[in-house]
Length: 355
Image 1 (spheres, rainbow, N blue to C red):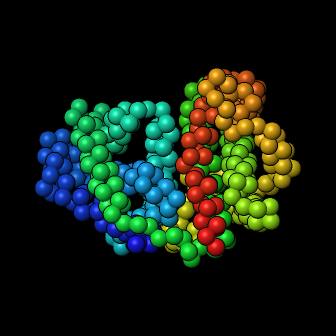
Image 2 (image 1 turned 45 degrees about the vertical axis):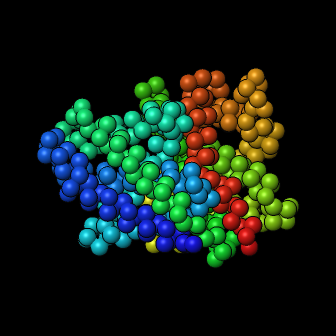
Image 3 (image 1 turned 30 degrees about the vertical axis):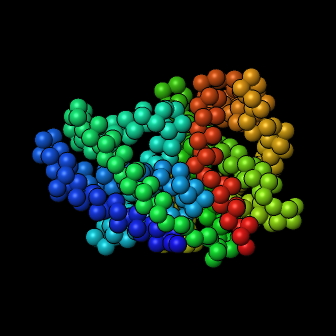
């Protein structure tokens, strides 16, 4: 039985071992020579593909412990790169970049079949590693193959070890970490909205702030719903009040926050000024959202009156000043559902039950 820290370090060692072999003895050596690629750039991309493979394998095999293991994996990468003398500001930017790319792939996974998703991973990796623009035709499939190989090796490793429970976690640590992640995912969701709608609408800083807050309100409400299904009234109130306190603290602190368990600095990509968190507005959203089902009851029942669809009207109002911009609402709903799945709020709150 392994702790999350031990398993995260083990996954990191596997990624680095496979990466080195691929570059020095395997297909990677041929790829670098044939396509004229920079070896270090290809190595960085292989490391990223290994992390994506680890994340997706954890989601399948050990979803409740996935975030703790991934934190430990990120920390192992952070320490290795730090030992090579990289400046602190570059490390922070790299951490933000990796998390953003993994979240974007999480959204991508909801849109495609498994085969299409694997192909998309290879193509995006090929674009990332090709410094001259258009990637060589065979590079995407080769990197897709590398991802699939790493995914199976990760799955094999994870299936042979049992992950320890989070016995040392106290409510404060679980909730503070969840608050940081809700804030970060809200910002990532706003980034996706901005990117997907940039051709149609200009999202200035004031609108961007509103979009971040709307996602915050939604995820906090969903955390309250998940807490309702897990705890009695007294403990639910304690959990939700604690989460609210940490969320408002993160908003006031702004762009930088240190997770309590690891040293890695978590830097938000854009300096979002959220001082003046509007409690009345949050309470208004919460009371509204209580009236909705999270998902439609069946295929024949439409999305009207379901939480994610009704949430999307607030994004539409924030971005285009009207309720019924269909494109904005559909994108917002899709991003919100992906963000909620990515957060695993229920998994984090379940750890408190072990106390």
